[in-house]
Length: 425
Image 1 (cartoon, rainbow, N blue to C red):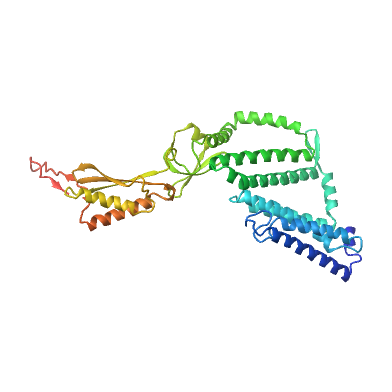
Image 2 (image 1 turned 90 degrees about the horizontal axis):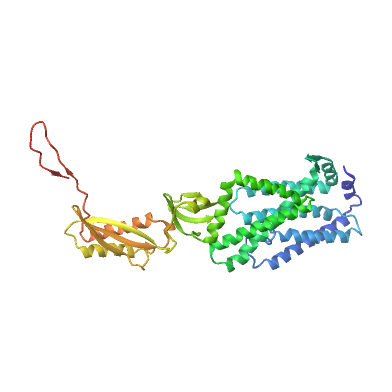
């Protein structure tokens, strides 16, 4: 057993444990009370306060601060056990909460967040256990003795771990700042969703780049060496990554030009749907039947795209029927327009209107035109409801929909030279 771990139990008595336990409980209650007081009006997804106060970042952070102050105050009078154990435990909890809550807020739909959270939790608790039992300095010293060669440079494993940890902390904090700016500032200052997306992506990229440079500089990496990496990256973009780079550049061009925006109804090739999101590399288009297409941004720049919402967000739908030649034209038009007007989704301006479009051998052909403003809610369901209402209205008025007629001519070539009379089906 390490000597540091053995010293934890030297001189421990019931009285000293009681004092430490009271101090620890006081620190936890004080931290909870402060978080409870300041978190009353905070949103449930707040990183600082969380949903139940104790699951936010602020509670373990305040508890860590108070416990460390209590440990420093008590250590001059008696041996310290509980407070010394509480410090690494709370520090690990702070690290877990920081990574987990920030990543869930920034990437709510990502499936890797849970895996990253579990990995960070295991590493944090292992580090806390090593700290408590006094093995952490020994492990760090052993890692410092293990070196890896990169050309003429030798780097220890501990330096690599320190760099990864520093970069991860800086990047997570950068993502946190970017998410806070987007929610607290951009949502109120920028009303256009596409421009807000541009500003959000630009701020996030700038903060991530700045944070990464600071993290590399903090662990002693010579930033001048990145010029070689930049040159290699430029060659890679010019050769193998030009398509990828073109998609990223096209994404920013689309957002800045606002030729298509989130919420627009577009038609790309034969796929028609509503734009749900514009990523830096691709655009998501969701059809009315639920299918979703991932379209590279370069295709939206270089190919023909029909923006059905560019000038007018209203969407036109039509329904055609054929009734008998002797039907009342005005009555048919009244029934068709009334069926469309009865639907709440159909716009009143322009008003639904029915036209007598054609005289066919089967009867009179009418076409109903009506407009909607929410094609993303589905078009076939509305068209079906209107068709049912038209059918019921025509049946109630005694107007029949003419069946499609076909003429079949049958000729008996072998027995008769004259053709058989026409049979109308």
